[in-house]
Image (tube, rainbow, N blue to C red; front, side):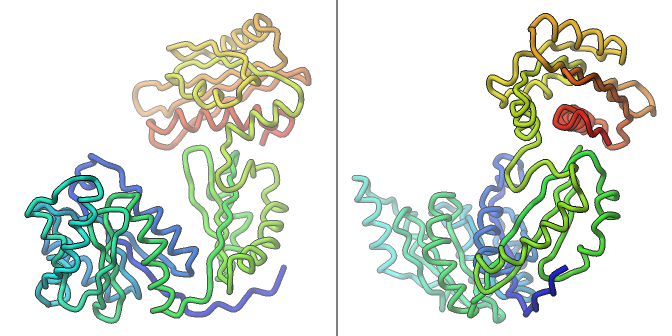
Length: 395
């Protein structure tokens, strides 16, 4: 194994997304993951993300707490012109200062409206008020100015919540300011190995010693039917960070073998269909009791996927095998895959039955799912895809 690269103190960041609509479940917070990825690439470690409703005191309290533990705090949302856009007032309260009117910002807001042949309403003037001591950040792609201020030694950058505006100002303004202020010279790189066919505890047993290193750092994230192995490296630039990942990835591949089906954004369905296509085969599916979830997964296979026969109720193992044989013969293809999910009443866990027929032979498998019943279908789909991905190496 390579000598571990030295690890220096890492600047830490806290992301605060603002908006009651997030807490009410009306929208999905897509800003926090985008900000986290950008901060990571810039060399910051995101230690926490927080979602707060449109309440001045709650936001002020959250930002004060974040500034006490992080070197940088990024907020997004709440910079609009309406009464329920409270970020300016909240950050002023957090800093213990008053709001100050900036006439030059009002002119910028008016100019943006005039570009679209519109006149701003009087409430748009709220966007020209910033906490005393804050530095205004011009928004060339929207009407809400952003700003930055110091709080308890942390640099706080307030960005709009509109994704297009947030992304532009994050890249063009926030990241450069953070680099300069924090003296960031390092960068992070991440590689995610996607695995299936083994549980989190099995993976941990195989690679636990690698998880103890600091740089590169190896961590696990379990999902229904799969486990992600994440490698994070920190170095002077992204290229050097990726170079640190290479030997660790090679060792992980040596230990985990065929459990690894892909990397980064690759999907299990994509890997399965590629495996079938590489053999020059096509596949049909018999699905029972899964509500179309397996059909949906295989649909990305294009011409490799030759059709599905779906059953509302579960099938017994023998009935499933018969249905696979019949449907495979009917369509005249090389591979028949079957997956059935039984969800019995009472305390008994769901049962998953699998059947696979290829020119090289046939495989069948049954297992019990011990997790939450709502995740059983996802586990069944993953098990079926893994069986078809490597029919000669069922583990």
